Image 1 (tube, rainbow, N blue to C red):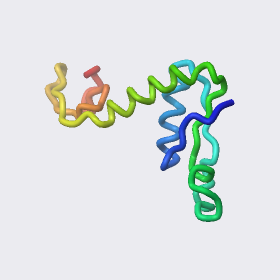
Image 2: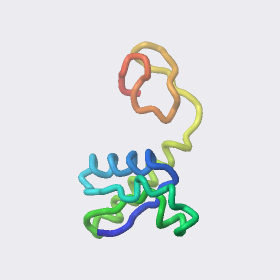
Image 3: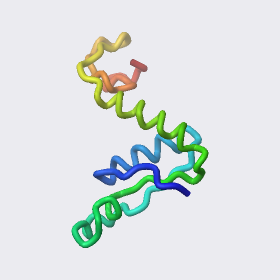
Image 4: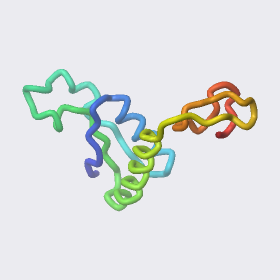
Length: 101
């Protein structure tokens, strides 16, 4: 196993781990409840961490992480071609009807 990512929040770690697992990259979250000991130990030790089961998946995982970060940084909105509602540009599905954006 190899430590891949140190998250600021537990939900960030689980979001990344879930995306990695969906892509066929086996990932686990550790230290999800250790934030209370920050100060007693260094933050990178106590914060939630995403670990990869196989070191050879690191390159694919890095590409997926960069894609997720780029998607999160995308601003603005898009109009759904199915129901004409506006959704944030970083959504994959329309919030109103569920159609693919």
